Length: 462
Image (tube, rainbow, N blue to C red; front, side):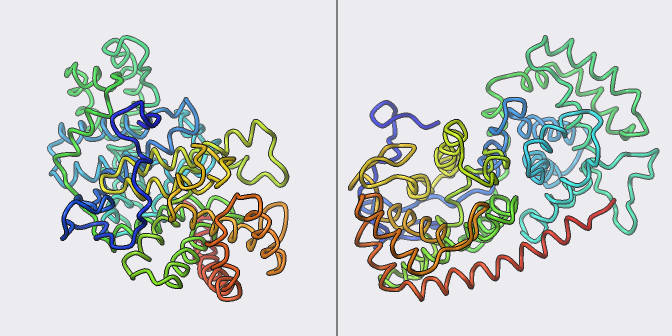
């Protein structure tokens, strides 16, 4: 957890302003010494990324607190009871962490907590669509796709030409147990009562073999003490430490693109936002002479800068008009959540810093950390300028894109008020037409991806 500078062991904003020039690889052991404070000596782990994503998604409402975590843990334990292979148990954990990610709205997430709810397969298919093309999660995507598929006396082993994974049925039972299990009650009595209730749905909803594994799991008291424990995250972390899944640079950037779709594809108004900012930021890096590797890091930062928005309700993000003070206070949380998520990934502390400071202003009037002047690193200043530039040049719920002259005037006004860095804005103004073309091309490509995505999920039926 973040602790205010000076209050905890590590100040996340204490990294010097040296910039990314001379920085060693983000995802490999640095070849130089440790003098470069930005160097990274760990590969990014898929577990860390998935942990961060699932926890951020569950922040949006107290009723969702640790839901993904509980389902992941219980799925894993059921897999143990059923004698699954290490790979199958690993996939169960990942699927548990991500199973409801496809529920884009708060209303959909909350409805999934009802034991019986309408159209349970839609969000599962959206999750499948998000992850199916990412190789490390392709098998997990299939588990997510069918995680509300009923056993139906054995007919649920097959859907049309698809074999429904056994892990999907395990995940289904774990999910239903999790939503019924009240961690505030006495856990052993609680699970006995819930199992008695669930038994009536065998074999219509649940596989008899998987339910037998649940009954055996009920006899293991520690499982239910774990599930009710405030230390569950640490308990699951010990399990995931046994399953190393490092991501190389290419895989991390690909997964960052997947997360961008998760962040932005919730609304047609934001569908191209993060990709546009990432491309603009990368191109500015090229203009000022940064290396290809440094440009990649800027690109990743742009893709992930709004990760915290998955914890902000869509009703606020899509509001077609000015936000109320209360709504604006909620929006101000998103860079804080971005920091919390990205800082959980070892080796990404600098990326977490740059991404989470993109709403800070040189005059100290920004949010949420109230940094000012040279307290804001160059990379965060560049991202802030890219964010404003892209916001001005793209469609919003309450207006169309600004003209180049309107963009120029607004950027100059923000320099005059010391909201943005004048030197960085000068680069934008000197290359305004080029950067507008870069943004438009990035938006065009992403709109095509969004249209394909929406076509798949809106024509879905099961």
